[in-house]
Amino acid sequence: MGAISAKEIDGYEFDWLASDVEGHVALLSTAGGGYVPCEVLQDTDALDAAINAILVSPVSSEVRFAPSVAEGCENTWRMMAERGVFAFDADPYGGPYKRVAMPERPIRVGELAEAARPLVRRMALEGLRFSELEKIDNDVLVRRDGPKP
Image 1: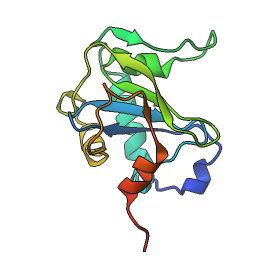
Image 2 (image 1 turned 30 degrees about the horizontal axis):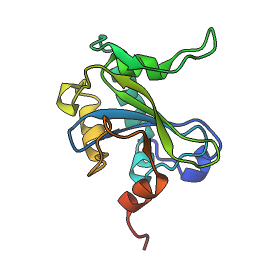
Image 3 (image 1 turned 120 degrees about the vertical axis):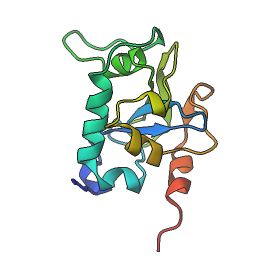
Image 4 (image 1 turned 90 degrees about the horizontal axis):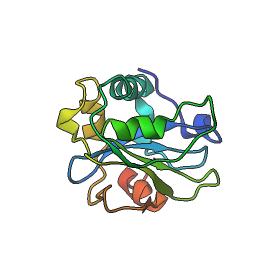
């Protein structure tokens, strides 16, 4: 179980997973500045395993849109959308997460590989619908964490 602190990822790209009110799944990339809920940082080994389980699963969807990346770079956002997962990328300076890739047929948590299901279920973002959102403001994620003792 690899727990890390928010300070350890500050300024670095960090990817995490969440689900919405419909049970759809999203990959969120911090770009070094996006907010990450504390719970995500408690077990980064499980998070890495969940992301890898999704990436090695078969392609299950056409992609409505995804960004281009430099030649020779892996396009993780497109790869996720091909597996039914929405993708959001944050601003390096702490701005909101913006939707950058969208699957034609979104996958639900129950359709994920078993290694990914428990983690994604725990990271439910209540009241949000990835298919309707163009952005996720950091304050929504901060509120999910609740008040600190």
